[in-house]
Length: 353
Image (cartoon, rainbow, N blue to C red; front, side, top):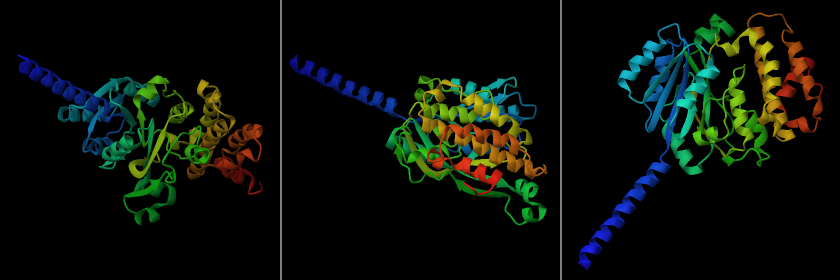
């Protein structure tokens, strides 16, 4: 009888150890939720989806069709027949902020990442991201990305003759945070300027979903909605890891809303709105300054786009000057890290600082 009880006890211990191991594995597995806002993207959507579904790992794709008028929804429905990890949210047109928010709220996996419907991933993105996440266990993983300029962009910005001499896809690695490994923006002084000037927007990042939900971080329905999201997250002192490998391809399109001539009139309004959110008010003076400086990059891009579209010389300068004047609360010593401030200052007044 004692031998029988010992066998039972030993079996119970083995079962408990097995279940414990299974639970540990479940708790520690790295899973991804990919949110794609989709609007009139039939020209690009298949490349985007194909680049995701060839990934290895445990992931779901949440595509939010934001009232597309082309064949985007049909493309998504065709893919859903092949891939049971594709969820489709079909909604009336509400804008990219609402599309991302709704996709994010439907996500169930451990890490969130956002891919625009005209961008695409490198084949080993999730494998590399999972390795970095297991190593560092960050709240946010920043990855490298590539700026991509297609031949049409080159043609419209540099002329037909130059367009003929370049490949269809021109890819340039970006980010420039290779010197950083693992840091917290609140406590790493040297990392500040690089972090707030990395230029990535919401793309090429993986967010711990529980961190996003804990702090109720969401996209604002305004110009620069992704800047609001990223800097809201930074305000809560996340642990950040950097993987300096360009795994995300960002397509620069001449017809993109962010490249519109109308953008420059929206920057100041969004910048002022950002300064009113609760997350901005809890920041240190230096952090506020560096976030303010990021917005000035939008003026540099906006003015370049005005000139690209044939606007008269000086177009956009008045709005940019107003933005510069808001930096009067900072002194020159503080502003040494304000890269965009000095670029914009030089553009408006020449190199006299």
